[in-house]
Image (cartoon, rainbow, N blue to C red):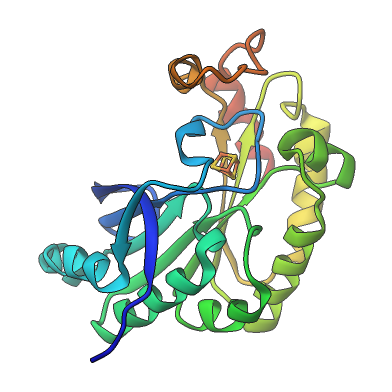
Length: 237
Ligand code: SF4
C-alpha cells in the first residue's frame, strides 16, 4: 500500500477567484520562514496546524470536479507552501495524476533544494510574491536574505515555468513612481511572465496580531490608497 506524505495545513478555502486561473480550491499551508512587515496571516507563521495526508487533500479537491473541469484547479498558498517541500511535491504529483491544474502561490523561499526541480515539473503556474527588488529592502521587508529568492528565480527560468508576479505596495515603503519603474526593469529578468499585479497594503490582519500577542510593526502605516495603486499599475504596462 502506498504511504502518502503527511503535512500541516492552516485551512482550505473553496471557490477562490484570484489565486490562479478559473475557480480555485486554495490550500493554506502552515508555516513560513519569512516575517513580512505587511503580512496579514501571522497565524500561519509557526509550524503546527492540522495534519493531513496528500491523498486527503486531493480527495477534497476532487469533490469540486465540476469547477476544475471549467478551467479551475488547486492552489497551494500559505504560510509558505514550499516550506513543506516533500509533502507539497507528493500532493502536486497526486493532483496532476488526477488531472487537476496546479498552482503554487509562493514567496520563493523556505524550500528544500532537492525537491525543487520536481515541484516545478508538477506545477502548472507559479504566483510569485516579490517582496523587494534589492537585498537591503528585502531584508527590511522580510527579515531574511534575498539569496533563496534569487536561487528560486533562476530555477523558474531554467524550468520555463509559467509565472504571475505580485508585489504588495505599502505607503512610504515602495509606493513611489521611482520604485515601480525600477520594478518594471527588474521583472524583465524573469521569463514567461503572464501577469504583474500590484496589491494594496491593508490592515485587515491587525486583529490577528493582537490575538496572538505579536507586535504589529506597521501600526502607523495607513492602508494603501486604491486610486494611487491604479496609477502605479498603469506604469507597468
Ligand atoms: S511570505 Fe506570506 S505568509 Fe510568510 S510572512 Fe510573508 S506575507 Fe506572511
